[in-house]
Length: 302
Image (cartoon, one colour):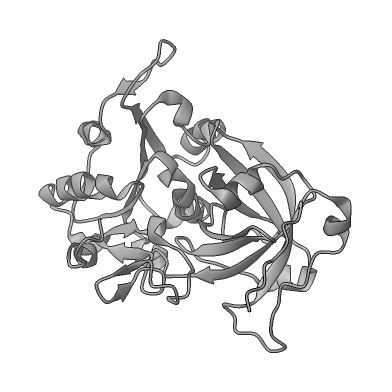
């Protein structure tokens, strides 16, 4: 017999004050544990992306929940399903969690209709993370394309909050059009306060764009890269990985010091649905963070 969960408007007050019981077991695995959250702020970034600030309701659970840069969570909108989302906030922030979400499906469309005060649930965190401690004492190059700047914020926050432990830090960011750029309000702070070199580029400029136009690989001409002391993190469309990482390889950066995120392949987060499988590898369990050498050995990974 099939049971159908009724749709619920997450903005309605009765639902806000009495969120449904998410936990389905008396004793739950960590991956099944659902943290009940409230949306405390919503920032409209572009026409398709919004930044949601989620606060875990239980103060004890709020202290318990932790994640590392590169990991993702499963975000549940009751009655509409759940989606995997990379965490975009600082791992030191215990007050709220930041999730940058693009409107692209049934669940995310419903979420974009939510208002402050709505209740959702999160599970996790899941997956592997970027080896930030290993990068200490070296230059860090962060490269993002499009929505890839969202998961890149967590490792960037990590470096900024421990700035004296790292050498030169640079962010290269490219989008198709200027209006698709995310977190523009933070650029000046990253550069002037946190001493992060930021270079941006778009493929197609409009009449108001005064910056660089072209492909993201053209930005390599404007920075000095020391291949012996540089770690790289790349987030964005998988098609970008080959062009960026192969270029970095030609500059002498070892592939085991380039890290990419295959977070776009995520589905259930626990290796149960098999939709993220590449060969015999579950990218949600064994990833989503891989070094580039490992990715090249995963057929059809990118």
